[in-house]
Length: 137
Image (cartoon, rainbow, N blue to C red):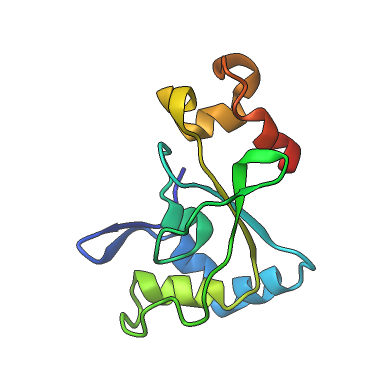
């Protein structure tokens, strides 16, 4: 998927840059609840892009969902510089309130990409690791 892809400090895929403009941000604000899920390891989409954060969050599993954890970000956790760059986009998108959930698979689940364990858990997740994530969603 196209997402925030940065090489040498420049955007390669502009999707999040476009979403961080004023009009799309106001559309996002119209939703009562906005939820992000992001895999911390073994995925095609980086956790910074999927969770809209600059630092990798700590993982503490939620009760009943061993592979899902809540992400709590400290106020001011994004650096102040980088006008117009990737961190500015994260800052704009983070100005909207989000509920963030980190997903982390370990052990045998790490054999396949995390995205596969969630999306194709019925056919490509022999250990059933993605089921609790799907139930949580």
